[in-house]
Length: 205
Image 1 (cartoon, rainbow, N blue to C red):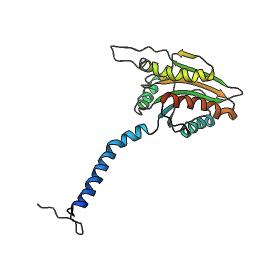
Image 2: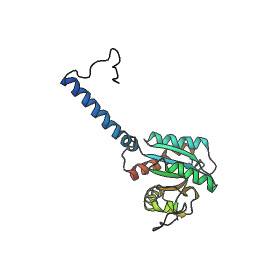
Image 3: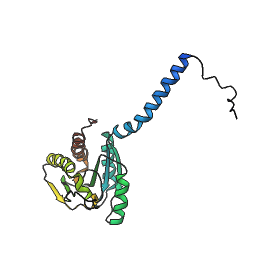
Image 4: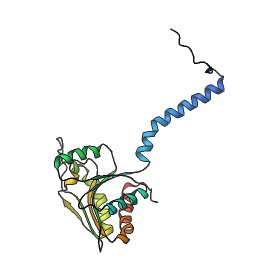
């Protein structure tokens, strides 16, 4: 059965010029389809914030706003102390394929106080890693960023058993920051500046 062309439709054979335009447009669209995931993945760095401690909504909002203003894509999650809930969260976070994970306790106080820590989990080889082992697979990169931030604040990097990093398949650290509210932008600037330096993206605004 021969299909009929819709009434009023124009013939595709409108000459070499028209064909060339349509061919170029088709190639352009095809190239865009191929490159669109690339632009989405690399147009901005993706940071995951995992809030722990007694959350201060104002402080949390300020942190996310600050990082977003610096050009980062930010996904925020509420932490948990339940292992089954952590497995669910870790799977959800890992699917984001983000650039970095920060378990953060950020609040306002009378003076600046900062703690930076990385997991003490070791890297296992020759076997399927357990949820406890996964963070250790990214230990070198995690420590690289942690060292940058700790040095800026004049602190040492601690090695601790970090529950929030269980199952997290990307570089990540724990960061506790307390500072006066009027000093928050300056303090957070030290974190975002080092994130940009670590990621090497040159997206500082």
